[in-house]
Length: 135
Ligand SMILES: CC(C)(COP(=O)(O)OP(=O)(O)OC[C@H]1O[C@@H](n2cnc3c(N)ncnc32)[C@H](O)[C@@H]1OP(=O)(O)O)[C@@H](O)C(=O)NCCC(=O)NCCS
Image 1: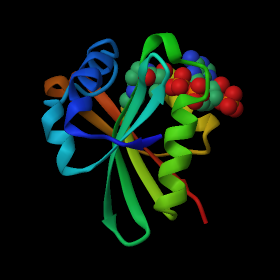
Image 2: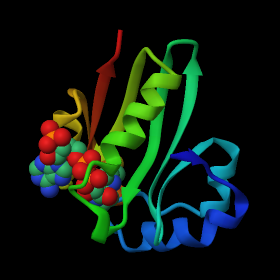
Image 3: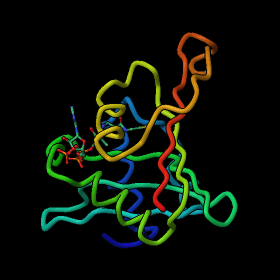
């Protein structure tokens, strides 16, 4: 796990593109936030982008793991690394249809907080806001 550098952006874009369930940002915008990558001998395995809101509160803006590295603890390592450095309350939002991510976040200790109805895609899909409290 390490902080990302601009030279990581093409690999981050490739992971994002192979993860259509994740938010599809212009990846250069991630450099304005905390951007971390999980590194494997064969390249990047995943990334997380997050921001602090106020001391003790942060938000995960996006997270994706390359399909060939899933179910191997990469998301866990990225989130636990974030929580180690920024303990407190962490929020994130996930599409209502993204049951895999919701299951993974629940395994990692997040709980449903609120539903934002008709939040995505011009109102066709709700967003689930999840919350984790680390201390
Ligand atoms: C959701 C995602 C990030 C999980 O990444 P991952 O590296 O496979 O997750 P991990 O291996 O670290 O697993 C973390 C926990 O979630 C659970 N989990 C992961 N995928 C799961 C699945 N498909 N079904 C059920 N549980 C799952 C794991 O069992 C693990 O819990 P455990 O340690 O208690 O066994 C990954 O599937 C992904 O990139 N999806 C596409 C992008 C996306 O949806 N991003 C979220 C945007 S909000």
